Image 1 (cartoon, rainbow, N blue to C red):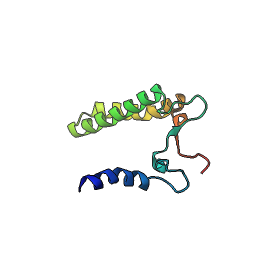
Image 2: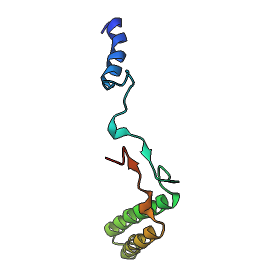
Image 3: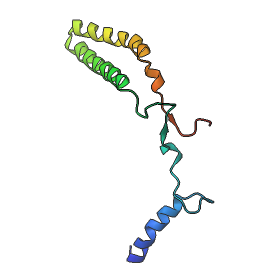
Image 4: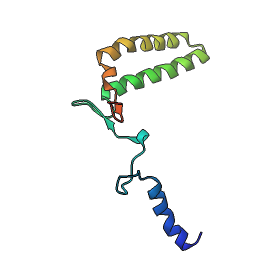
Length: 106
């Protein structure tokens, strides 16, 4: 590739990302649209939601390890944590953290 082709390559790449009728502005792919939340929402969820999610992930990993190592007391504690995470998730309203991607009207 010579210098002329190298200079044209970025222009061709930019042109391939522009939509007709946009005046040459680069359009973002639809799958990478910005996240939007409702009134007063957070784009990445509440800290309490992430804490509960982390607790459940740790419980599943520890429960799996306990199952392999035959530590039945730890396995049942992890099962209890996983079961109790359901009402805890309802209490902190974890499902209200849902983020809408793209146009919500579509």
